Structures are given as C-alpha cells and as structure tokens.
Image (cartoon, rainbow, N blue to C red; front, side, top):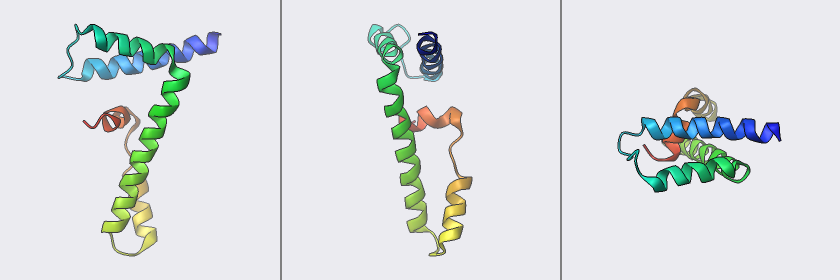
Length: 97
C-alpha cells in the first residue's frame, strides 16, 4: 500500500509540474484538476499508457530520421540514440507542445 501511494505522489507531482508549466492552461479550471486527480488515483492504468505514447513517438521519430538519412543504417541509428528526448520534456512531447 505504501508503494501505491508513493508512486501516486510522484505521478501527482509530475503531472502538477507539467500543468503549472503550461502557460495556456487555466489554473482555476475544475475539470483540469479533476483530470489530474483521476490520473493520480488510477496511475496503474494511466502511467503505462503515457509511457507507451512516449516510446511510440520516440520510435516514430527515429524511423522518420532513418528514412530521411543516408542509407547507412549505423549512422541513422547513432543519430536516433543521440537525439533522445530528455526526461523532463517527455510529457511535453506527448502533449504535442
């Protein structure tokens, strides 16, 4: 039970951080806070989905780089790994910002 609440607190902190950083989001919107609460309470369902989206977008960007690059696979692979998105920007990438 402690593990559940520990991860829930981390998810809440991360989602709130992203919400506060968003300049366009209204901070007094009840719906936004209810969504944050839902994401926090049901993190076993929402967290894997968020991680899947991050990985899918990263893989898609790698594939598009490979198509645009020289046919040399090793250099495209190296570029893909060097252009990894820093963890602090992952959710922004998911949300399309």
